[in-house]
Image 1 (cartoon, rainbow, N blue to C red):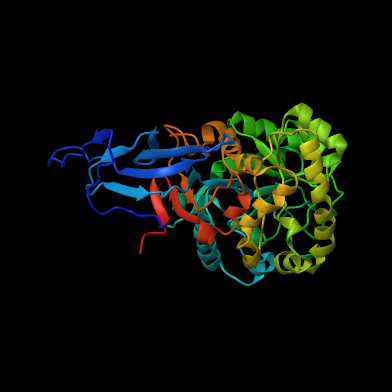
Image 2: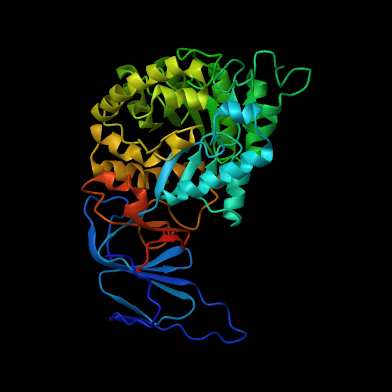
Length: 457
């Protein structure tokens, strides 16, 4: 059955909510949306709430009722019949790069800033239409994009931007050509660094300055590179990046702003050094061993793994990152399955959903395939929690810098943000229903506004 948005007066029974005509001098009436006849996954529990009706007032959930609600249709009321489908929170991806939607080499050398911004805006809308109503951008010039989305200038998910990533010289944030000058040394600054994609910082004073500059620009959390990476050409995967005192300087500066540091890291040495410095969130950690698993469990830090790499090919890596990245890509891909086993074996609960697909438009279209890949370690319910309520908890870790404080994210309850999906099928039985987002995600609402609705013909 298709979703139906009623165009006539509807009285469903039980509770009558009369919406009187506005007097000329009265305050504007709230915008109401009634979603009826749905089974709810609330972001937490492993059973659906059957036959529920949800009233949304402006951008927040007002009422969840087991009894039908009655509303008189007026201009400020929208009716949606869920047809017995599943209502669930909007998806959250904790590690994306919205402003690196095309190959890094192309962004560096072949396009101008106007093109870069337009393409990033297009990708933001596509991500929203894949069901992702919130993302945490893990590095890049996404602060302006987040502002444009919040102001309604371009459709897209809520964005928690990290701003420019902070890297040591010769670290994972090092994307200079061989002969380009260092941006912190005399000489012209490489143009790539003018785009607020990355900062290079060496020593405690420079790390403090870079952290504070990212916060000044509008970052909601700070991203540091604590180990080697795939996309960078100057640092092998085994390298440990930033000295303990450098990492701690960033942690302390972020804490002063009531937020936290997330670090790009793959191997044990960088993981352990980061935990010791007070880092709260480990991005990837794909090549972790039991030693790291024990430390992560003891420190109760967050882990943001990605398994989209299991479906990506060497050709994808070469397209997005260049041919030199392929050997490192293959090494990381090999470690992903073992990481799943360790996270599950050591019962590490602070694991969230992320994809980290970067620079390849064809791979970005497959963002939702991450759901099925995680079934190798977790149940459908566990994966859904990772992509909703648990991600919502991580988003709120930025404390007083949180731009979205009217209600919680990733849950369906009274007072929560109305970021909602209606799904044809039961994702608690098989989370892979979310992979075919074009057909199975039939309604997408963010902040109380409907961006997709498969209506009756």
